[in-house]
Length: 375
Image (cartoon, rainbow, N blue to C red; front, side, top):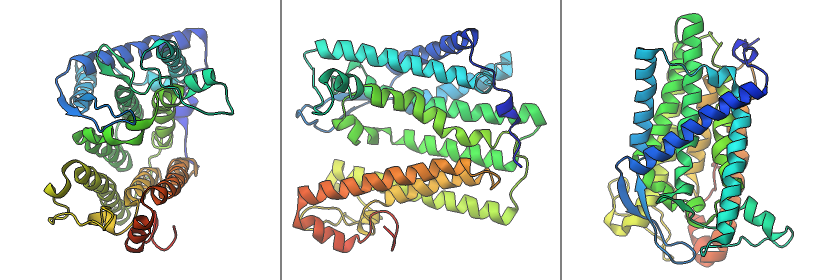
């Protein structure tokens, strides 16, 4: 039976604990915002929005990611700083994150409805005020020149990384060493975040940035859902001291390397094709397209969403680091499977309506959506 001593150390929710967590969560968000505002970064232009406007974005997430790690490790080495409160006050930080989410969403609701950029999300079966709160009242809210929708990915992803580091710190402080499983788990996640940040400009082409208003739905997803749910595997790694045998570990590392490569390279192939057209190379060759202009080079000539396939398997490798003593770590890749297969179905429907017979032509080449011979 897997030991959950780390979970047993979590303190109850009290006013004192919540205030402690709220103080540090607020400091963390202020640090993130100030760093995003003032750290140097690459200026890039976004794709046209549905309102046919083109916005400028500053991309400096990689520098912020590295800076935050350096601050933690140097503070720990010289001053004994620790991330252990993220574990011991987990539920209090969860409450604090929800408070921050509601506060930011109320701010966006009030300022958005008063703004000249008011862009109501229409949904007939709910009142408009609820739509404006849930989905957001504006498409691209900015504060002090910082695009808030892009910014909120930073405390979300880097916050997740801090949670994962806290589990590694807990294991080392408790048992005096890190298991090979924990080391591999930390490396897998670090590479996942690093490969995100080295091509962070990809994010400005995503549906969230281009077409979604920014309200409670996305704020809560960034602030609460991602860092707290995605760190769930860490609870089953912290006290897990059974190390995987070398052949299985080698197979796991290989599986992660392949799936991670498919995931990122598929996204980058599509991004580069959209940005550079025939001036880019895919697998060393100029891109090939159908008569309707749909990309059929690289991964996009094999399956319609191999980026989703790679991402699902990448998350499976995170869970495999925890062994097989509990099914709970596998809820993360399972939930992602449902989410992405549903998104693939919606995308298939949208593309069929947009491209018509050209989409049918493409589907004869890329025969499956996510999983070969299955879906």
